[in-house]
Image (cartoon, rainbow, N blue to C red; front, side, top):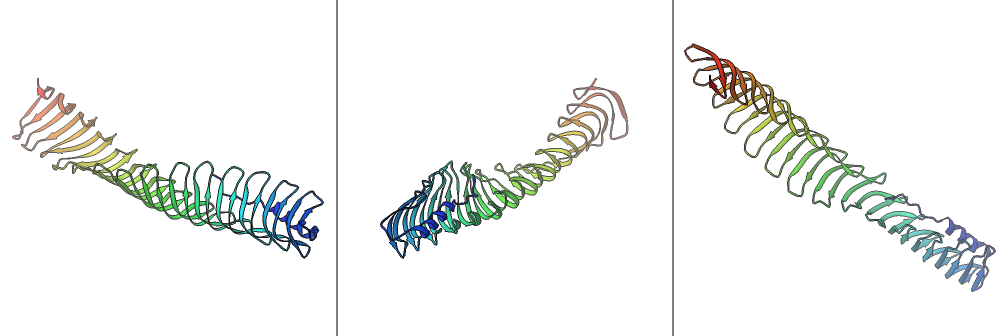
Length: 345
C-alpha cells in the first residue's frame, strides 16, 4: 500500500491563474487554450458559483473568489480521480474527499493540497490508515488496518508504526508494547488466542532476547529466545511440576542442564533433542548412576551406586545391565561376569 500520496494540484493552479488573467465579466467564457467557464463574474474575474472545463479535460464545479477556487467545489481529473471539498486561494485547503485513479480514497483534512491533520485513508485493495497526516503521509497518532485484517495503533514516523503501540491480529492474538516498522520490536507482551502469553523482548515481530512464555498447557519457560523459539540459557517448569534448567536450541533441551522430577529424582548432564544423551548423572530413589546416555537411557559404560550399598560398574543397554561388569556388594565382595537384559548369565 502506498501512503505517500501527493495531490496533483498543478493543473488547478494553472487553471485558476488563466481565469484570473483573461476572464471578462460574462456568464460564459472561452479561454485562448480552449478552456470554458460558465458562472458568476465580477471585477473582471470569476466570483461566486461557476463550472469550468479545462483544455486538459479536467473539470471544476464550485465557488470562486477573485478568480481562484475558494469555498467548496469538486475538481475531477481527466487522468482519473477527483477531489470534493474545501478550497482556499486556489488550493485544496480544509476538509474534503480525494478519490485517486487506482480507487484509493482519503477523507479528512487538507493543507496546501495535501492530507494534513486528521483523516481516513482507505486502499481499494484492502486495508487503510486512520489518524494524523503530515505533508501527505501518515505521521503522528494513528491506526493501520492491514490487508490481511490485522490492526495496529500507535505512533507513526516514516509512514510506519514506531514506538509504543497495540495490535489486534485477525487470528485472535493481541500485542501491547514497542513497535518498529509496524512489527513488535523491543519489549512487549503477546497474548495468543488460546490465552497463552509471551512477555519479553521482540525483534522484527519474533521473540528474540530474554522473555517468559506461558503455554496453554501450564508449562512456563523463562530464558533466551532466538527466531521465536527457546534457544540459549533458560528454565522450563512443566505443569507436572518437573523442571529443566540449562541449554536450549530450537525449543528443545540441547547441551548441558539439569532435569528435576517432581518426586525428587534428577538428571544432570548432556541432552540432545530433549533427551538424556552424552555423559550424565541420574539419581532415582536414592540410587545414583554416572555414565553414558543415549535416547534418554543408560547406554554404554556407567557406574551405579545403590542406596543399599551395592555398586555396579559395567555396560548398559536401554537402561539395563548388558555386557561385562563388576558387582560389588555392601560388604566389599565382588562378582565379575556378563549380564543380559539386567540379569547375570
